[in-house]
Length: 248
Image 1: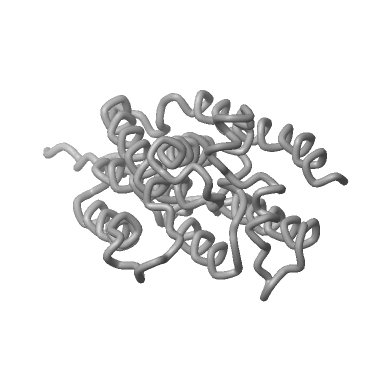
Image 2: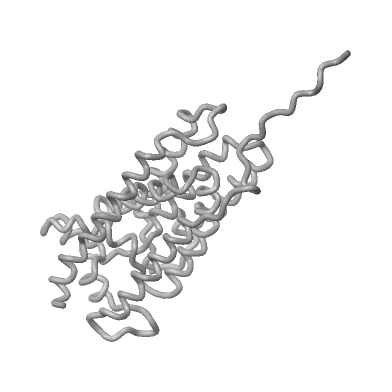
């Protein structure tokens, strides 16, 4: 009599996963903030694009204001803002693709925590290496961080899925990190992209090392949720100084 064959416990999969509500919610926040930029604009909007002065008054990241005036809350508001329709559509599209995969694999706490931490990493890199008198906005640092983390943690998946996921991540990461892919004179903040990607890659590989193969859920989920809560709490607090600046 032979023993009955033992079925292996299935590894991580992306096919029977719940819907990615946190990813969709994050995109909804981008849209809501963008509508506020248009509604509370300082100057007249041009083709549904707020002016640079509007972005500055409503929370855009400006090095001389952050460092000189101590307005560090701008590091939390700028990643939720966008400079135009194409800008928000591109970030929303990439986030929908990458964020959905990350959320289904790691859960909503890690997804939001990754966005918060890597967005701040992107803002920090921009403040250190970028022009100090330029207004910076956009979720790109956080989106690049999520993509980089996705590249790292894909090593936990079976080979075919891991390869496909890494390919998808690189298809967005490489053009976003190499200036040659953009026209000369573009306003893309490569420092924010690179800062977010580096932080995301570090977090992804750290998670891969800390996550036992026999454990279904990733560790430190509550810590990532706390990081996300803190990020959005500061962003909400920033409404107060923004209202004062805007004169509402």
